[in-house]
Image (cartoon, rainbow, N blue to C red):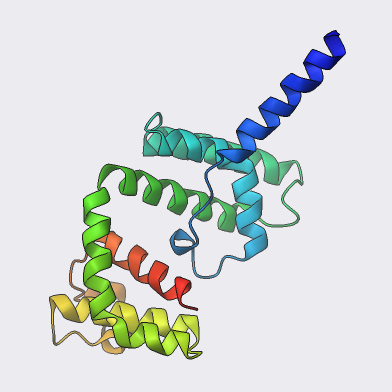
Length: 185
């Protein structure tokens, strides 16, 4: 009877932890991240993401826990050769964006409404096969130009960082832009 109860409890635990595990939103990942790297980070920190999503952990604490787990996994050789330098930014972006989305849901809703209109032509081009990296660059340029119409993306990003004059834009705009483009890819 004890074995039967232990088995049932194990099944319930596995089911409850996997059914509610938060996933890393693909629009929050670094552009050079691979699907394998995302899966590794998801496996390492999904419970941390759950706590962030539920409002139980803030960015700093969640980030510290995630970095510790990733560092230990890299040192133990459990990351299939992927290093801390790519896995940690994946976790940091996921945590930062999830926390921000939780704290400011209205901002993300408004950004999506605005960007569906602003990026309509880029979204159509993505549906027709435009390369996602080219589309993201075009979307970012349109976002910057919505703040400063004379902004020239190539010109500004060719300058040394200290000389760039880039308009201030809420990160929600870039996250939602990538979301819309990835959904229509």
